[in-house]
Image 1 (cartoon, rainbow, N blue to C red):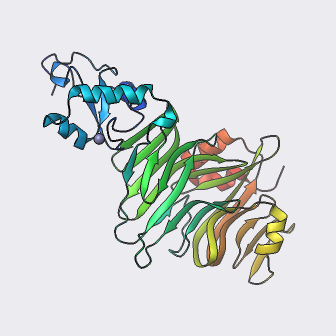
Image 2 (tube, rainbow, N blue to C red; image 1 turned 30 degrees about the vertical axis):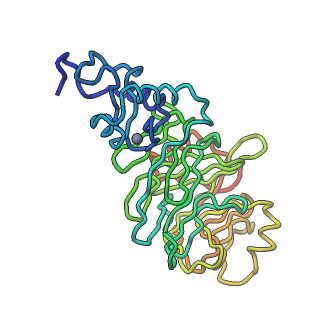
Image 3 (spheres, rainbow, N blue to C red; image 1 turned 90 degrees about the vertical axis):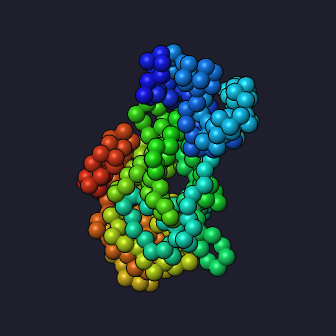
Length: 341
Ligand SMILES: [Zn+2]
């Protein structure tokens, strides 16, 4: 209902975003990542317009302290000013807790289905980028993940089942069960959908990690490697399911020092094996589906996996690849094509 000046409660989107940016995407007092837009002074009933100078992000708990007369409006104003003027490194990131109470943990990524025993979801050069841990004994289930944007900058971290936004992001917005991080207007770096307890679905991810790139929609993915001229080659494996994980199994693995790692650790000649004529793409039990030239394995160290198809090729421009993964997920493999041109 509009106030006595006829002002609607609805704050236009661009103004909401400016308020989020100025509040560094969290409650200006406690940094909670779930908040409402609070008219500081004048309060909403006396406001004549929605002015980002006078509206900040405030969580319901801090808001309740204001309405109960425990926090002054002047305090809210001071905290808003502090968050706006501080250097980014001094502003704590917005945060919130995730629900993993029943012992399960799953991160759904790019249409790749895996057994609960697979705990490394994305590994890059030996380092866990996304990992899940079901509860064992006293330990709590959970997810650890570091999400980056298309230039390799932090967008969101999940550590010990608390998500932390990046104060330097262009926009981070929590809408219903989704956390959305934008690079600029209409361009998403990340969309997570929380499905509590224990499940997080990556609806969209556009992430550069050093010499590699990960594009993920809910049902498809494209894994890229840049060459020295910044051209990018792509790999896609349409996995049906990965099961029976061995030690250090990973859903997606980017290898370092390609040939050495391949020879010494991954390739042992055992198991059932299918390979392309040039031996570049190998599907082998216990190994996964590997693109040796690119150093990418899907389903690494899993004894059982069903595969629909795989595709590798390039270079393909990243802009077009994004369109395919996000808007035409069932045509990704076809677009990547085969061979290295
Ligand atoms: Zn608060």
